[in-house]
Image 1 (cartoon, rainbow, N blue to C red):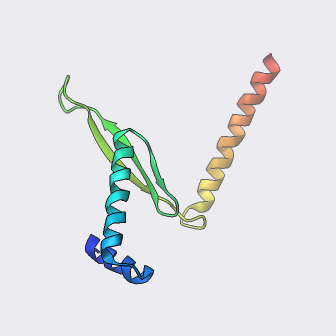
Image 2 (spheres, rainbow, N blue to C red):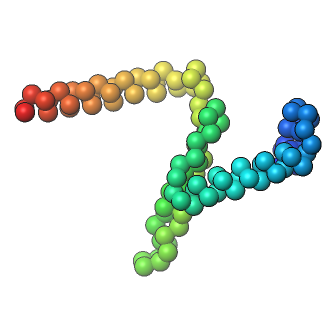
Length: 106
């Protein structure tokens, strides 16, 4: 799908002029770009997130590259949901155990 097709579909669904949709989209993308330029993570709920990563220079002393990465948000019941929950639970348990040991030493 191209941006024009997306604009037309949104305009038809929301019963607004395509020019209004185009203006809103242009500003949305401008704001996303500005946030990424500032090094901020951009999170779009129920869609995903954009983050800027730095890649090492190809040559020593060369310029570091900034790369925008996108991570799709997975639905709660999506593939591997149980594995993610188990991993998060184990991680929380380790954090609690580490915190509890520190408290005992004080």
